[in-house]
Image (cartoon, rainbow over all chains, first blue to last red; front, side, top):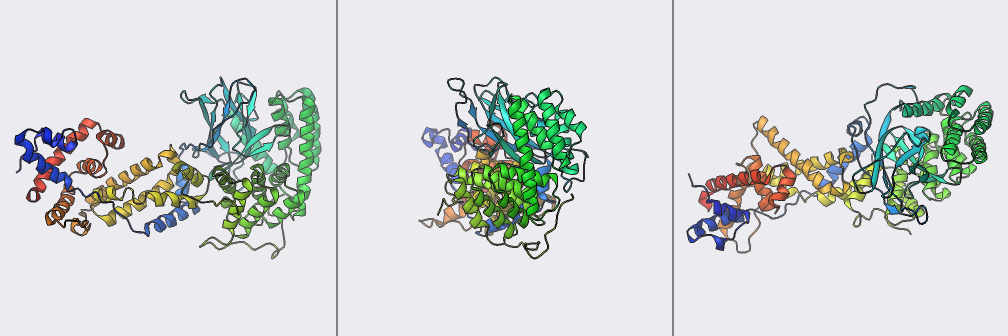
Length: 218
Length: 225
Length: 187
């Protein structure tokens, strides 16, 4: 049974001291220990070239089969952050520089029970969690209003996420297409330039999101 | 949340029944719009309902205008314009071979018209949107692509190309995101769409189209009236 | 002609993750190509066999796709993938123990790289270390592999494994002693 390495030798192996710093009586032990870890094979390992195709074959089949893993993927309510370009632009001249950057996020499905109209269009009565994010560092209040909440400015307030100027909220949206916009400080309607925008009929624009069983598409 | 539950009911209500009742319209508008707007919109909505057009988008538009602080006369004008567009959309959808379209398809058509797609293009797209494709979905995808800045002609070509190639509805739903990704890499929307259209050509490996190409079967209304 | 799409050299991990989540499944191949070999060495050493490691890496990449919606920080995809692989390696270990299937003999595992000076002892020592590693506990093996093969600092290993630096050092020091015992003929 070999003796344990001296603590100083272990520190040598950890890289905390050098061989020269060891006392003479530990030099031999130190050199032996370095031979031990020096034997570690650091050569990169290459896996078979066919690996990529095997992975993509599995990935394609998972993506295409809704009853299978993709469904499991969607069924657990989780949050994913899809951060689109954040572009600061001044909404009101001379006033706060409200950076309007929207990231529209797919989250999973809420564990929802039976709802009204369960025969509608292939049983798509479910909702999908969607997380809204707005970068508005100068704002005092932020809300999201749209067709899913009757354009009610107080129905869906966002809350600050930390001190970075990011505001966020998560809503359960029914499957279908929705229009929406952010309301900053109760009065300023803000759209994301990076999301599809449609004419709102009043001379402004609304952002559009299509919520499907697969998630939110902008 | 009660509000969301209500919105859900509204969305489904219009899908299933195609129209809100007069009571529903009043209940929706009460307290949300001025009396003047409410009177006018109820009239426009009743007229639309009588013509078999979906009423919910009109109600939503009025509520939206009020929430945004738009003056009453502009709200009423916008609702009237929308009603007209819904009528146009229904004509275009009918011309595409769907005799009695559901509210959903008509709304999809109106979205497309709003995004700059012509009535003729709406008809063409409806015509090729045979099962498993749903014209409500294909119209909305085309409308969203146009809203992203893809020229209407190209948006149509891209969607029709995907349909011809036997792509699934979910593949189509992914198109706006892919165009956006292309734009994020520096392409113009038109370039991004063109790239996707090239890639879409041809049946994806292993998948055989399970539908009959247009023209080989009598067009029929795929939706319940 | 237009901008060539799918020019993957420029896309960051976060951009690719977003594209995949938006429906562009084929783009996932970019991440597969990028990371297929990055953790191969770690998996091989942890599992003692390159074939088993290949299964683990393949499985981890597919699992990462399945759970891509859970990746909270898409620009940290690499680290997140590593955690999935790590769990997979530990699970594989437990599975083999339950089935009483010993890991493949490490003799067939790696062709030791040809050392320029052809030193026989060094090659033998390398083989001996590979075999000896398989006799450590998984935790000891991992800290040794991460520090001496992957070059991570103790703080970084702590971040990956969730253990404290102090406990990692304790494991490592026990590993040193155990390895010394196992390799005594070759030192």
